[in-house]
Length: 110
Length: 222
Image (tube, rainbow over all chains, first blue to last red; front, side, top):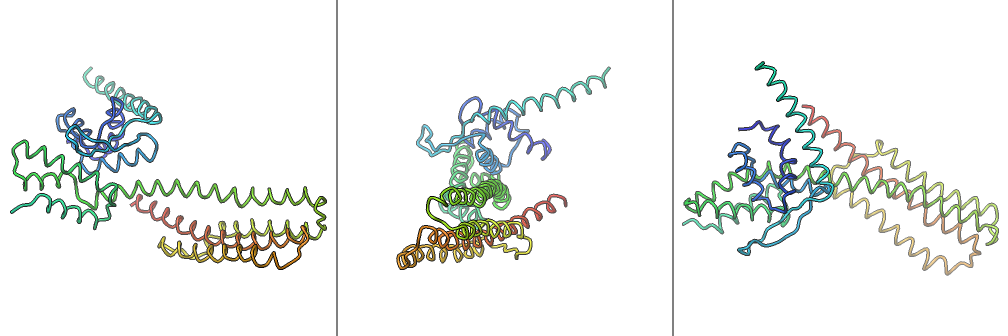
């Protein structure tokens, strides 16, 4: 299991990156993140929605009500222009942390 | 006998009592809950177990609500900022504009120097009253309840509007004002009480918000 702080910090970049591939809704986002992390990134389901609403207020994403193939009501979220910029920034920062960490780790084995 | 709809209705009541608003975001959370229950029953779980597990995964109502409240706070902070920009413009640019018009047209409409001065004073008093409320907010009582603040707001502005209507409909027609006299009466009657009302409410609102901001800071430090 990932640490709480890391889970919280990674929520926004993950949601942005997922939505960059096309619109999606809360339940699917959670399932996708779970599947891609082999269940190790396990959000408390309800906590995703405040994150989504906050991102919507900040103008990073937008939402619309729609229907699933089976007629179930769903709220779909998609990326806005500011969201794309924010995502690029996140990627840059996480890559930086990752490369520093990977570099240091390599040195330990030398 | 377990009834899924009853159980969901119960869950909704719990969420509502924790302060989660309906329909947004409660409806979205309920759709999520239903989808999770459906997935789990398809995977072979019985309905009561699927329901319990889905509710557990969604998380405790008050924790989710605390997160949602942070969203509202951001939203309301943004609105307040816009409001302050608007008020600043109204209390500075508007009197400047009217004052400029008075100065420019004074000779054209036969305004005496005294009348001119009086009108400009009224406009200055308007700005001063509004800003002394804003800047002197710390001397005003901190009223935590938004409802009471709204009540004060309405009890200031409703009489003000009535006074404006009375001035235009009752007082002006009964006096044979020259243009200059009218402008003096108009600036004092319209702007001065408005300045006092804006100042008082601006100050009260600013004081209440400052208190909240300080409380937040200390909470995050502990």
